[in-house]
Length: 240
Image (cartoon, rainbow, N blue to C red):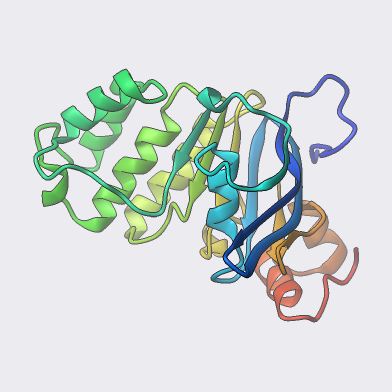
């Protein structure tokens, strides 16, 4: 059964209304509206430059230079996996987990180290000695195993091999639930379309209505990826 996105009595809402953001004269977000009850996995899809990262940074509390309003201002309860990294050259895996636990959002070290061992990543390993994919997976684990009810993932499948992609998908399913919201931006829609409850399309600085994944498949006969491709290429989301 699909979750309702509006009109949920007593639901803790996450998102914002009328979010606008420009870089100089270039408008990136032009009144984006997003209202979600905490619980489940939701996608935000859009072409390169559509403003997905900008929107997530605003929702994570990392960018306050915008107009509009946020439904939830408790940024201590929001974890964010950024698309880039800034690890010190001498930081080890263990050091990063300890640092994140002490100064970040809290970290479930036992769960993180267990997952790392299964992926043949050692606790004493220098982060910068790891491949891009391994560091990407590590940053995913830091975010998903943090003590927050909302997790924002910006392109979590980038640089991952097939095994690590499967681990990310399995972990999302296992760690998400009615009391946690995972909001995911990605171009790898095939990787996530069976995981998400529904999705938004970000185009022209605005978010579409919320599309429940199962409704899309039943009412249009298309996959989420096919439906999204029509939406961004101007064919229009038929059936809604």
